Length: 156
Image (cartoon, rainbow, N blue to C red):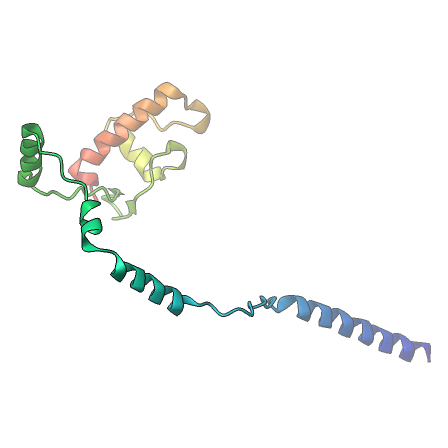
């Protein structure tokens, strides 16, 4: 008798817990405002006001352009004549595997093959450990990475 009562109580408790969890999973429905937007009326009033303004007031608001100086004109011509070259800085490419690394600005998180390439190309003395990094070595590493980017072998 007690066993049957225990089983029924356990089933009831499980059902209550299930109902509560199921209720929490349903997203709360936001209350919609009872007022409807009156956008068409506002737009009609704005058009009516725009039509009533005289054309003279619209033209008088435009500011006249200042006269262009000779230096500005020559600078603008130089910009127009300059050839358009796309700067392609998509990363470094591993010549062995063809893998392209695009994030290597922080030496601590740089891929291992980039660190090895810096040493094999003679740009760095060794592969530095994280505890060996200081301001001087980081500037040397950044200069070495810039030289490595310039090499055709490692361009992506």
